Image (cartoon, rainbow, N blue to C red; front, side, top):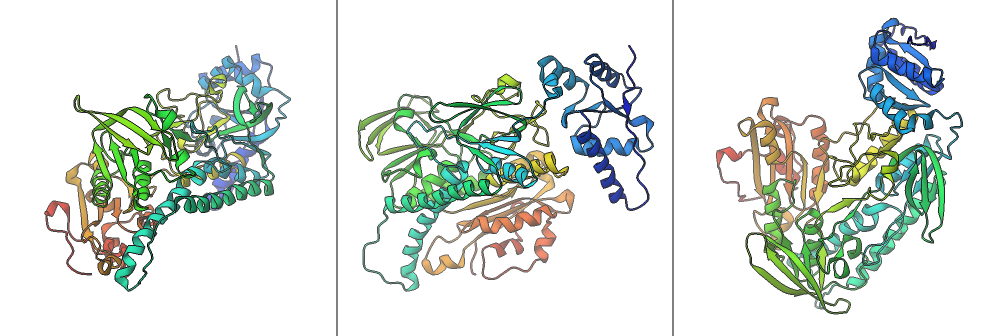
Length: 612
């Protein structure tokens, strides 16, 4: 069966001028073809896969606009620009009602599943251009950017209460039960340390200083409430429809929204963005959901938690344990294996060592097997039975509060993804996407913590969400860069990092090709206060085969987040050891140590500091 000729699109070769201007003009023309045609096929006349696709549309009685890349002067450039737009280098490259279908196989799969017919419906007047499921950092960033670009947008956000009954307002984990309250409680603990330091600097106070949990949580929750309101106001100003309902797909392009009263409403959209985030994981043992709390509950807990067992060794576990100990509570951390999995292990052990020296107890190689309530109260009393991971030994202890911080699960299993064919990783619920955040279903995208193999960080989700909206609705090409993303663990002694851990660097480049520069340092502010000498630590990992480029940056010390942010920008620009050496430090600061690093690990020389 021969292919129908269709309407042949004509592209004139860009005229003279700068290459970038010609390329931009070509990109605009291609986007015009995609926007202006119900079905747009970029093809080659001799390609058998292209012929199959043309025959499919012909059998459906659908007229196509076809551009044969082997029959235009600038076909090679067209294919190159197309690959930038679609992340697909092959033909046929097919668009249906502005949705990128992909190639031959994906188009036939869409035909078999009914998705192609849905996209081809003449009545494509959806309720919205974009519906975002999830009102956290990434979802809100994407929704607002799309609205700025003139699109009709809805955000569906619904917080399923925790087993303890805790829920919160618009803004997602970071604002309500994550970064914001965590950093504020960390600050409360730092202020306690500052009060102790103050006496050495001449401040005299006779009254007994004590911390009041309720005062702190009320102030923090008031601040969070103002942020929730600010997000709602921002959506309203940008004409984004906000619906406080639980979203679930019922068929292609259609979602069911269920509110707190159980009332259901259906909405349709041309495109969807999944930004549902994650929730804390439970142990699956007797008494965990009945009596334990998680980070979902801690920051609005109406009473002081008292003697606390923190289960887990994640950054959430260590941060929470750190500020609870910092405000004067008796805190124990139960660790199954290693601290801060995925982070540099030398740095992780230094974080743990500092916490242990400052009153946090560690129970290593144990896991809870039972949590039993002995007394009700605010707080009550709980008995925890734990078993060794290395033998038959069991231990038991009584605590007021048990905080679980053993990881988080993606909220992707109960939103109807199976009804539209979106693939997820069955083990962890994460969603595989390509490098433009597109799932295997062409009109469904995802951002944030639910992405497989991507960093679970608020600024990453925000950046990815904004750039996604610009690619979808403004013809932009910029993709989110997931490389050299800085982060900080807000433990009592903060740990900031960017790039590779030492373990990962050795795995990727081999130890003989690396040089690690390091030093201990003593912050000036700690000297008069009589605080720990030679505890803070800095190191960089350099690739000897690439002009000693800095591929790993690590700092353990006060204000590590503020220090790390600037060096992260330098690493984006290709920071090398020589550039650090050429940089004049600001004296006296902690960050200046990175401009004077001389001792390598391989030398074995002493790194303790003797002066300022």
